[in-house]
Length: 104
Image 1 (cartoon, rainbow, N blue to C red):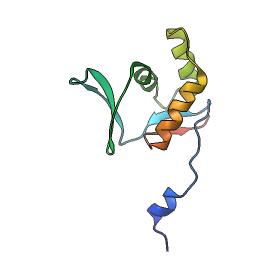
Image 2: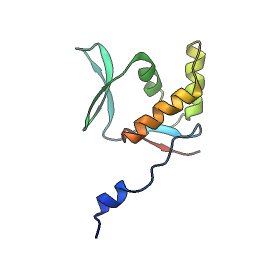
Image 3: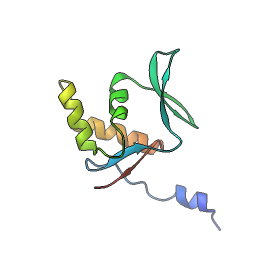
Image 4: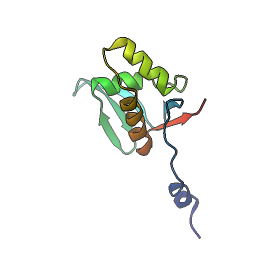
């Protein structure tokens, strides 16, 4: 008989959509790394060093804003933000189990 953990791991993973409202999972957190002089995303599995774009996206990732709203905010700040790139970034974080989300 499979364990509960194994059963959960075999469940199909949802994908992030433009309506999703992503937030960091409980075990993940953003932190300034004084050695690298960059923000990093810490998790039990390791450390992800963030580039400026990833840092800007995650700073807006609060569980309240949709992916669409995050992309719009970034477009207002910068010249060119592609919605699909923001969506792909969140889907990569979801696969690494660093974010969770609610649908609207």
